[in-house]
Structures are given as structure tokens and as C-alpha cells.
Length: 230
Image 1 (tube, rainbow, N blue to C red):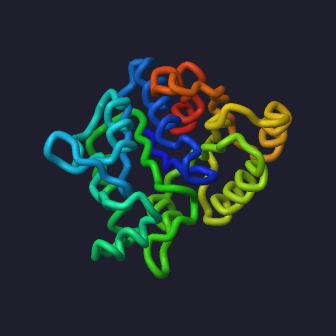
Image 2 (image 1 turned 60 degrees about the vertical axis):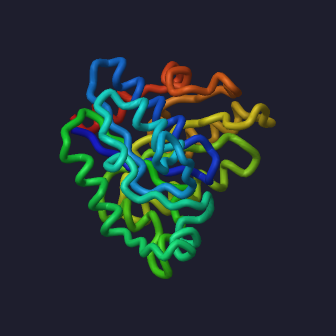
């Protein structure tokens, strides 16, 4: 069984879509894949209950999905920084509890489990902790989604340094074109390839309205994650 924590260079870089694509790609290999979003900020009312779109995306892309409560155990209403939304709603967030939710999800059995964070690596949870503390508590290797745009080199290299500085392995990264155009895109990817020292799990082109889990799966290779944890 393989478990990974998924983070991004920023919010809005396509973590959920990339995670869903990796889950679909693993499922296409006949594997039991499970995606969870232990903490989400931003709720919509659907079929009589509050849910999060990213959590639903991961659940739908999983070949061994959990029920919604296990997929997204902590849901905050406002689509803002989790510690701000939590304070407004009178909710106490802590890394140990969120990590425990991830371990509970992992206990159901799978070949590949992806636990997606919220925003980037150091998004605050409370006055002391960040989502990085959740990853450290889990001890799982990390997958980094790089949103390909101007500034991504700095964001990606800083994120990778912080991940390794926390004592965790950067298990792989994805170059995701979450915006339609980027100057010197190929050169930027080559720079990251040389400096991140981790497998590139795929390069996703700009897909626009066609950006679905199935479409991304065709550009992603989960095999390095599966081989490493075999």
C-alpha cells in the first residue's frame, strides 16, 4: 500500500485535478485508488448536504472511494484560508486530528491513497501549526503540483526545500498548465527537472474546459509512486 500527501506551489494550481488524474491513472492499471481531502474550505449545498467540490472530485476519481464523511471529515464553509474560516465558524483545527483522519482513511485498504492538502505547503491551521505539520505527523512522502506560470521556479524550489527541510521525501512532481500561456514553458520545466531531484510524474498541457480527471490521467504516470512503495 502506498500513501502520499499532495501539496501545491500555491492555491489554484490544480492539486485536486492532478490528484484525481493520478487516481484515475492508477485505476486504469487495475489498482485500488483512494483520494481524500481531510480539510476543505469552501462548501456548497448539494442534495441536502454541505460538500466541497474538490473532495467530490477526488471521491469520484477513486476506484475504491470512501463515503463523503471519510473523504472530507473537516469542511469549513468559507472559501478562504482555513485558520480564518475556522476562527469565524468557531472550529478548532489541529494537525494531529487531521493526520488521524488520513490514517483512518488509509486503514480501509488500497493500493494508492492520496491525501490532498489545502493551498500550499505552509498554509496555517491555527496560531502555531500549518498543513506541513499534518504531513510531518503522517510521515508520508509528498507529491508537489507545480502551477506552470511566471514565478513557478521560485515557488517550486522553495516548496521542495521546505518539504525536505521537514524531513520528508519529495516523491514526485507534476508540471500542470493551469493557465493557457506561459513564456518559456519548456525551459522552465527543464530547469525544474534539473533542480527538483524527484521524478516528474507528468506534464499536463492547458486543457481549459476539457480538464477532467480522465483527461489529465492521459498525461500522468503514477508508476514511480507505486514502484517506490512496493
